[in-house]
Length: 399
Image 1: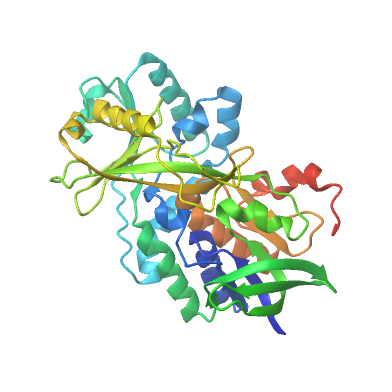
Image 2: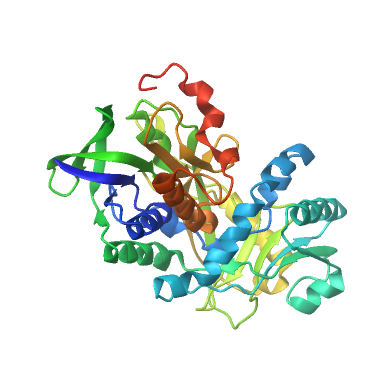
């Protein structure tokens, strides 16, 4: 039976980046992905690098916003890591960090923006608050209805189709074993190790392995995977959608968001505009139940509303044709914060998921590698520990 220091479950950004960091320390690593690498959320998202507090994190009152503001140190570290990532991996990832703008078009949104600005600066993020003229001087394509804007100079975007494969290649070069079509079908804690059964989804063959440590990086499926180890994790799959326009001349070099509405927008190198911001799609049903394993279906009204918000903020959007839409599934936790660390009562079982998985994925990976290999991290991540949900595992065996 093959033995590894670490088994990583999930071949998305967090899994592949964790494999790279861990393999660089000399750990023997097996990454097992039930399908193909980067097939799900890590490759289906729009590639935004949004380090400012998003609309969804500031819309539920001051107390909740202050709690979410505690993620800012991770965002600052993420900005540093993304700025050096192409050099670190030696590959072109189409990383563009020319700044991000969050706009306010109503008085209510100005109030939200000012509160967000204060919280970010309190936690060391040097966001700038701009007047309408200052905002349009930086971004002349914005509507003249803008009342205020927040600007962070290091926001941007990267190509999600390139990032995860680059991490996987780098991990392989460091000695990590990367296995696709390898599905975990059972896992148990035995004699101080984890015994794991893997099924090859290509030929149906079965292999048993042991690992000192398991890192659950299965994204939206982290909860399902944890159940095999008799662990409950409150991670829920959520169906979302994105829109992409036809190509146009260079228009917006920035990442755009809106303070009081679900909108994010950027222009990629080919000239297309990617428009999203957390609008839902709809799960398809199988045997009378929502089936997150199928690609979700679009909700037409949500497409229309999303595009209307985009055209309101950037009037030139109204002249462009919608090229296509796509849907995908992301994983969120019960409190929308990341879930990072070892599960109490289950020695050697770690999880890294939730939050802004693409933006913060390289940070999650670095921190998990530090925690697994040394038992500590340079940044305090106690706020994101699975221990905050320990009450739902208090009656589970394996503790």
